[in-house]
Image (tube, rainbow, N blue to C red; front, side, top):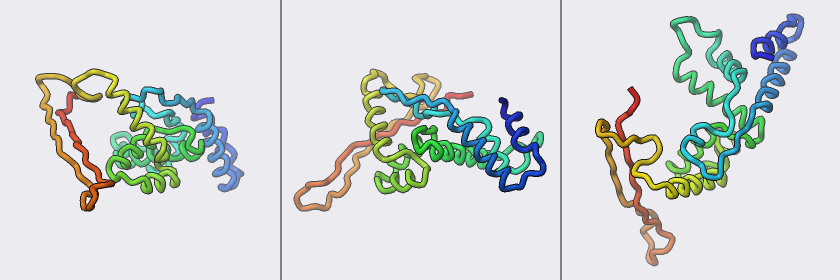
Length: 205
């Protein structure tokens, strides 16, 4: 059954109360989510796997949140704003994660977890976001970080994924040492690491 046919079948009975229509819409969307094929992340995780996630957002779910967030379907020349599109996809991903009890991880829940762990370094932050259904669990993200590290170290190359070795592109590299918890008499439980970043012009036309 196509998306349009499913919507027409659900909302064709005008005598139904709003409560019944909402319930039927909810069951219809839940069913669409549970039928989404899940592709587990491979053992050797790469950047493309993180960007793709384990499951794609079904069109029916995008349509629902598009109507909820954006109102009536956009007219020609007045497309849905980028901000609303981002929120539509974010809420749709949260719905998939919550309906499947975290068994299916959309791209958002992997990327947000990796970013928040990198930015904050806080396990508590990830646990709170995970309980609210916004990202994968701390242990899942920690395992993904390890797998990504192994995947990168197993491949001999000059540049990471997403970067191109080209004389027409400017590439910059910066390294700095990072010290934390250094105000101790014994020197124990301190952190000393060297981190680096590399940035490059956008290669897309």
